[in-house]
Image (cartoon, rainbow, N blue to C red; front, side):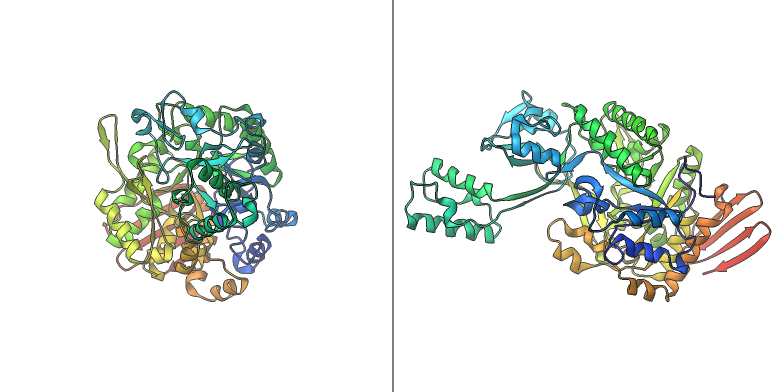
Length: 578
């Protein structure tokens, strides 16, 4: 049933990091080999610490070779023997500063083969802005106002070139700059200062580094030329992490994509998620998010490489429902991510009202969308996606009203969630993006709600993707989020489970019952057929799948959080009540 190698199988997809269970991928495989997990999953979306990376928990890729600290070649063979197909990421928009390409750029500067592989901010905006006191081009307002910011401030990281200059490179997502203390011998080349002055400056600089203060703001009581010399020494000892945007106008980038898709295929990849693809095309006078027609041209070029490697593409895009980008991506023949379901599910369970979810289900069925859905995932619970949007002077409604979205966010935050925002070019927050929490905690740590949410997800159209921690009713991990520091909000939902945790969880009803539902969804022929939404009162859900005499029927109560599933499998009837 799951052996058609040209389409995503109609089964259930596990989602985890290579070290989400135990310490290496082999520990997750040990879990999947347990009898309790037999026939539970047809696919496994392994997050990109599978590859060599250094930031953003895998999404700052150094190279697409196996991360040998977590993954072994025999792991891939074991997954193949379990008949589990693999899904990986290619992060189209960026690579790490530690990638061979960017390291070559830092070493050789303008003489690097990879000079145009990344985007020099000043070169890109030359003639379309003014240089500020720090040597950064500030784009003209008509251009700057169109940029879509994922963090406060300009999307740049200044990096040191061999000539001593610091060049700004486009950096849409994360960066981390670490300053290291200097020693007295670092000042050996400075002959203008005596030993006492050097010691005084050394103490000031190191004190600022200890306090995480901006060293460039210090008044060292020396002339500006000498101060710049000292700051250059300090800069020379700092280390950088960053996800550096690649230049899709460079043929070297497309050669890299070609090599990468062939490489992931060799690892057993069948489904390739295109992370951050909507940021790839950049053009002066346009937004840096989903420019048309440039984005479509890039996507088509990637599709041609994917077809050559027998890979199915899954573009990842977060955008307001009212923008209708999900519809445009689907019209191009791609499967789409159902980022609407997580928020809708919380809404219907909190309001005991099916209307918003049924509207979305009917949307999927009427438009024949091919979707991958989820509840929890490695990222946050999306809220931006549910919103309406003004397009060409008219307002397209969202799946929920703004006040309803605010209520979802408030509910999750009251239950301990953390928030991720979007910013305008001045650094002002313009929108909530997502809320970070485990799905179980977002539901008030109510096992009946979690089980009902899982049942509804598994009866939704599309491929159900299941976050490993949700199976085990994982709770918010505040300690991990706090210890991760700035930008660490996502760690609230990434707790590593030991194999002992797995064995203990398998004794609990919430785990056993979820696995029972997952196995039904993964193996029943009914889900290869058609979904019908039966009429029901607002506080109930009534969904039935039918296929050549097989059926699976969900009847759920959104007030009491109980439900019944009736299965007819080739004449054999089973009733499951929860």
